[in-house]
Amino acid sequence: MSTPPPASATPVASGTAIPSCSAAELAAHMAQQELPSFGLVLQELLRVTSSRTASGHQVAETILHDPGLTARVVRAANAAYLGLSKVSTVSRAVAVLGINGVRTLAVSALVFETLGDGPARHRPRLQRALARALHIAVQARDIEYRMSHDRERAEQRATEAMLAAVGELAFWSFGGLCAERLEQALARGLPAERAEVEVLGTSLRRLGDFLLDEWGLSHFTTPSHPVELAQQIEAAVQAGWDSAAARRAVAAVAAEFDANEEDTRRCLEHNAEEGRALAVAMGTPEVAQLIPIAPPEPARPEPPEAEVAAPSEPTVIVWRDVTRVLTEMTTLASQRQDLPLVFDACLEGLHRAAGFDRAVLCLYTPQRDRLQARMAVGRSLGDWRTQWQMAAGPAVTALLQPGAIHHFDDARPPPVAVRSCSQSADGLLAALTVDGKVIGFIYADNQPSRRRLDEEMAEAFRSFALQADVVIRALPKSASG
View 1 (cartoon, rainbow, N blue to C red):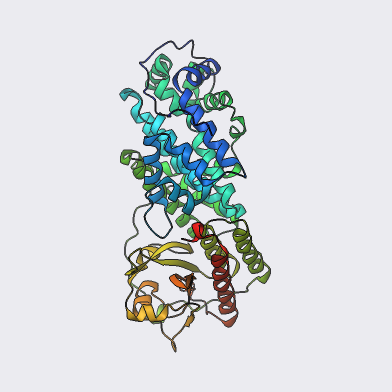
View 2 (view 1 turned 45 degrees about the horizontal axis):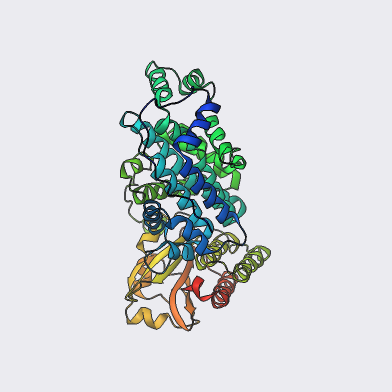
């Protein structure tokens, strides 16, 4: 495969040979004169990762040609990593995050590397645009996944959101005299939309559409509904997560899923924190600080036992949905998908189909001396995921035997290490095994709602645990280790 030259480029001096401030002419100039390498790498990256026959080697080769891009992708993969050991190579990132997950990181890294360091005068605008793009990308990915339960489509939305920012970033990096004119118009107090039209004849978003057209990527120029929702969230929380605008935006997203607004807000806040982590991994901590996150909640004491709300009615499990998710897990194995996708489907199935309030995946560290959470889903998570860290002592090792499934309650309490993490006496735990070796466990409970874990929920849990073991054994070795 022929590999394009590196994407790294140095911004030219302000005002170099730009024909006019017409958006179409400016886009053509940028694509041909300022960003030819960026366009080539972007085209190749999207072509390879969109192919149904693409291999991880092809994706890695495209990224590895640019050392700066490689470094950013590896750092970002570690920030987003869900797997079994530290990511140290692009090939490992592809193996554990999948081709679509790495595409999102690579596009983001490419944008940060090439468009993130323009003229000092415009750098504050570049940093705000980068923060906005990354925040919208992580929100759009999560919203799409909650709508479709399709991880590939979710990653496509994140890529779409990053590409939507290309016009604005390219303009402030390479716009020269045109960027100076817009800066002056904004300094006069003109609203951004009016100032952009005055200078360019259209918006910076439309400039981005022209750029994508120049690179043959026009199919990314129409924003999808999840991206539009993510844009509304990002704009609203600029006034704070407790502002009226933010509450309205959260309510609109919650209505899309017929979900509780408090739980929806927690998910969206978590996404914003993920955006910050990725910005730091990209080497831009100053950009991370521009993504608004919610202030920490004050610690609240546990209510006295007498004040604890009575448990709500038992969960009604829709077994048709359980069967659908179990089938999806089998499909992942047959398509030789990656291990994180199997775990993701299992946890989401426990929460959404089987009705558990929350579920967590814990895996051994590479030294096998500790277990810690890698994924968690559910309601009212707060810092619950971060609490799941425990030494692999004798009691825990005895618990985690191949094929073991445990139902804890007052009569059969969990070990102290598990109870200290879960903060619940009632729960279900299943060991996960690869090649006869336990790699960790999944755990689920209903502590937030205090609903009883009845036998039907236990049966659903056992179904997911057994199917996860079957699917893991069916995966190719490169995906499961």
